[in-house]
Image 1: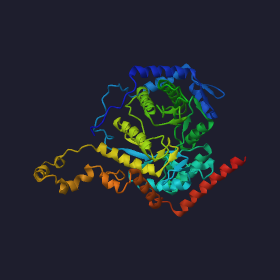
Image 2: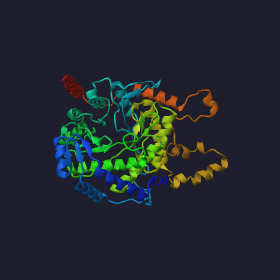
Image 3: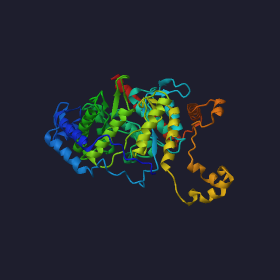
Image 4: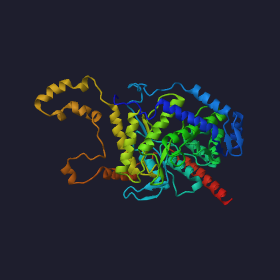
Length: 489
């Protein structure tokens, strides 16, 4: 596909070096507040960190070690003038897209009314997702609110297993629920060993900007390390203007300093670099809410991607997903999602999440899901480009038909190629104006109709036997009992 740009550049090399050096100075000066476990703290001490209660300081020797390992690990630096990837790279004409989100609210299919998400909403969504052959799942979209709060993550995982052809990703919210996730996936995959080989659920640690990690976050990732044998995984998702300075340069400095801390932790625990593991957001001062959509959020993500490539090597892309702050499907949602995704497509991104979500992943919607899938079909056709071969040049067809007038639609050539060459949207309305005036149905109306049909008719593709389903129910009940017992105590 020749329609491919260099990833947009928002920072020069000199500016990235200034951010790096400022971040190094912050890394040396600002301690991490970490409510670590004994094992976690001992690993950091052995690495050279100084720990006083919940304050972790990184002495010069530790800072220099981290920076040296990052420098050695970087395969190469990419200058702003670097050529774009070759157009015959494997990613050029195929995209991967997935439904995601961890919404507490559901947008009603017919009225857009918001209500607490339920187990049934998640089951319906699971059925709908698997009617689209190319659609994957990166997160559950709904976290049921009609179940005990302490085990809602277990219920989400179990509901997906019972209503899908295979398990899909759910994040673990507490250390004590992790064994239940392992048991549930073992039911679907056949053994605990299979789970250890490829755990579907996410059991990771998150930085709480600025410079803090809670005890529960550490315990989740340490428990996964113990039970699954997987390395400690950590990320940060700072919000510019709220948890970092409001200036984007300042946000990048703090974010990069936190990234240095993340890599110090993974080097101490597992002798490995975690990389530039950040997904920044911005804060809307008028609405008082964080946002993943908008020009400010996009340029901050671009800056973070450049910093990642500058520090750790490799190419950077234009990281963005079809996210939106809109609360209902409609003009704002599609503007946010289409612009974010188009920037990313042109910048080399070929993998997208965030389908089916609204309000920065706080709301899930089957209507939005079908709209997003249609948008992805647009990008799929765009990336196919133009195929030039003897048959598609159509030289003989032109010579045969052109003297007769505009009658190409009648040819076998058209019948053979029109499905491949032309984009045939399902939801967009392309009728002539007066035809539409006699039946004023919009794209949004079509999406509602399809979403309602999916909820009513999409099959449950769960392959589990009745015995396995009973085992899933038993595991969930055990998790609920543990939550109840903990609550009483």
